[in-house]
Amino acid sequence: MTQPPADELYGRHRAVLPDWLALYYDRPVEITHGEGRHVWDSEGNRYLDFFGGILTTMTAHALPEVTKAVSEQAGRIIHSSTLYLNRPMVELAERIAALSGIPDARVFFTTSGTEANDTALLLATAYRASNQILAMRNSYHGRSFSTVSVTGNRGWSPTSLSPLQTLYVHGGVRSRGPYAGLTDERFIEACVADLEDLLGHTRAPAALIAEPIQGVGGFTAPPDGLYAAFRRVLDRHGILWISDEVQTGWGRTGEHFWGWQAHAENGPPDMFTFAKGIGNGMSIGGVVARAEIMNCLDANSISTFGGSPVTMAAGLANLSYVLEHDLQGNARRVGGLLIERLRAIGACVDSVREVRGRGLMIGVELVRPSTGEAAPETATAVLEAAREGGLLLGKGGGHNTSVLRIAPPLTLTVAEAEEGAAILEQALRGA
Image (cartoon, rainbow, N blue to C red; front, side, top):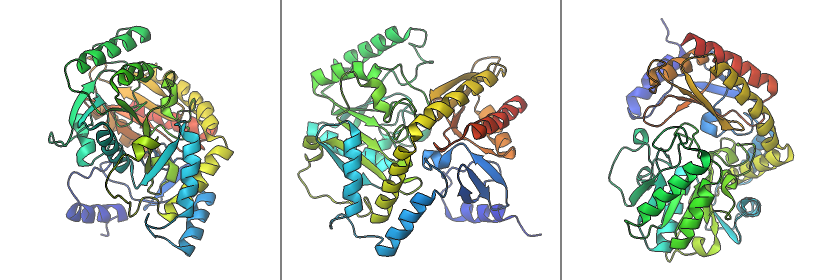
C-alpha cells in the first residue's frame, strides 16, 4: 500500500535531518500552497492559518503585490552582495529608518532574526567594550551561539557555554513569578528595584536586550512603561537598550507600529532588531541603530545574503501594502474582537488560565485545573484537535510549553476570526 505523501516525506526527513529539528503534530503536515489566510497540505486538506509560518507570513499567503515584486526582481538579478550598490536595499533602509523613531538611524540587513540579534549584541559589546548583557527571564532571541546565551528560556537554550556574561532581570512575565500579585505600578517599581540591585553587584553591562512582548515565551508582556522606567536606570549607567522587534514589529500589536512604543516615555531604544513579517515569508532580518553605535566597528564587515535584491524587493512591496491598507488598524480591530471572543470561551473552559495579547498576537495559557500547573500535554492535545478541525496554531511558554500562540496574517477578516475561534473552542472543550 502506498504511503500518504506526508508520511513518506516524514520518513525521509528523519533519515537526513537532525533529531532536534522540531515538527508539529503526531503526523507532520506538508504545506504545499497557500492563499490569503489559508494553506493546503499534500493530502488536499485546507486550513485556516493562525500562525503564519511562525509570524513570518505577516500579510497574506501568495500576496500578488509581493509575488510580483519577487518575480520581476528575480528576472533582473537575484544576487550581488553588499559589495555593490543595491537600489532596493537603499530604498527599504530609507523607509525603515524613517519609520524607526531612532534619530540619525542606520539600518543593516541580515537574513534572520537570530542574525539580527547577533549583530546587535556585537555592536553593543563593541561600543561599550563590555561582554556583559542584561536579558529578561523567559526570553527568546534566536539559535546562534550568542543568542542562545541571552535566551532566558531553558527549552530553547541548549548550552550554558557563552561568549557573553548574561544577567537576567525580572519583568517579562506579568502574571507569574514573585511580583505577580502586585499592582502594575508596584510591579514596575519592584522590577526597577531588582535592576538597580543587580547593577550594584556587577561590572557595567553593555546592553539590555528585551522583547516588548515575549514571543516563544508565550506572548507574555510587562505593564506598559516598564522599559521606559528601566531606561532611566540604564541611561545613568550608560547601558544601551536593544528592543527585539522580531515578532512585535510592523503593526502586529495593533496599538503600535513597534512594540517599544508602549514604553516610549523616555525615548526610543538605542537599537532595535527586526525580521519575520517584513518579508512576508522571504528571509529578511536587520538592525536599526543610532549612527554612532552602528558605525563603531573598527574592522571590515559585509553581508553576503543580507539585503539581497530579491528579498529587498519583497520587503518594499510588503511594507507598502501594510501601510497603504492600514493593517495595523486591522490588527487592532479584528484582534480586539478575537481576544474578547477567546476570553469569553476561556471563561467557560477550566483548563484556560488566561487569554492575553494585543492586536493579532494572542496567547491562550493552559493549566491543569486541579493544580494550576502548566499543562503542556493539554496544549499538544488542543493543537492536534484544532488541526483536525482545520486550524493551525502555534505553541510556546516558559517552564513548560503550555501556551497556544495565535498570530494570523494581518489581513485576517472578522469572519475568519470567528471561524478560527469556533474551531478552537471545540478543540478546547474536547481536550
